[in-house]
Image (cartoon, rainbow, N blue to C red; front, side, top):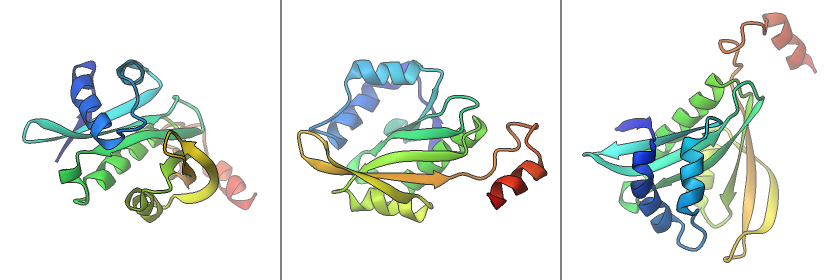
Length: 168
């Protein structure tokens, strides 16, 4: 398994997976190109035998306390083999490195495999957005994960700060 940072050269391969994975509500190439170029996010691709087979992104502004998983998608023949979990963990690591303390995401209510992955990694449902995914009228399950303390990112955070926050 090879996970590496995505570049603008990966756009066509990413968009091919995007359209296969989300046929009714895929992002546009323009939107994805902006995401790949943004300094406020981290996009990764998973390569297998020289081809991109999956990608994911997290929006995590440096120093912000929260982050958002923007998307994760794999070609169908590579799902269910642990690659999505590895990519999710790499995105969470990127969020921690940028200083995030919690991560949010939305998952389609008709995607129990993805929901199960997120729950198994500690995400909890905090809300539902009825009919969020259009044109399919599918609810979005909003989920949240509290991340490990990012003390290594901000040395000004002390053990006393951690203890105080834990007691609140």
